[in-house]
Image (cartoon, rainbow, N blue to C red; front, side, top):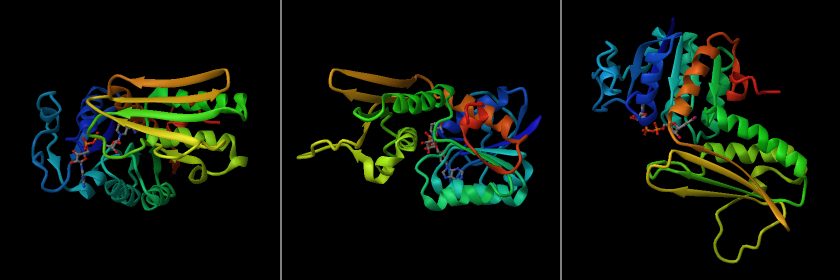
Length: 269
Ligand code: NAD
């Protein structure tokens, strides 16, 4: 059994991750972490996740929990990702992070940790979205120039960041296939208002927020006379947490390096 800790254990994703880890054949929950001062500190992670008593109290001592685990699953906030990455490198603990809206400093922290331990970071851990990324790359290549590309994403009203990490990743995949017409910063157009005729190489990115939408992404390729739409609709967060648990079992067998879900699912290359 792989000793597994969940960081952010009282969050929307964290509670579901606790349930998935408890149900996973290869994983054993040995630690659960929340922010200092959080009301969940000291509570049993299983009880909080609706599973009943698991005997794992939620702690605010990230260093101690990381040291006792073989793999950490972390879906929290960017500053926590950077700290978890540094501690995982120090204690030779593998890391799976699904936190989005990372800045340059947090990406650098993951890269630094990945020189010492195996790290999986992916803004979307669902199998379907990772297949969508491959399909979007292929459609971009096959359709060629002359198609206007727009990305529309929709999420629940509590989501803190916009656009979603997945929408950004979809845009990056498109840019990778068409690098000759500029980088993402040059091409991304976030929403439109006022006088803003569309540039030929623009990638429009639009974020809808409302209610309890789990996560929806559509990539639109439009030209005169036709349009192609590729999309994904998540109806349960379980699609992400199952991916996170699958990544956790996979990452403990990898050499140091920075991986994403394409690697975990065998879709890379
Ligand atoms: P949430 O706000 O419900 O949960 C985050 C949890 O992290 C909270 O319980 C918070 O108290 C905790 N936290 C904050 N600081 C902490 C610290 N120092 N130590 C330990 N815990 C700490 O948010 P959520 O909806 O669960 O999303 C969390 C992250 O996961 C977001 O970045 C979101 O975009 C991302 N996400 C990723 C995927 C994916 O597939 N990669 C899918 C869904 C959400």
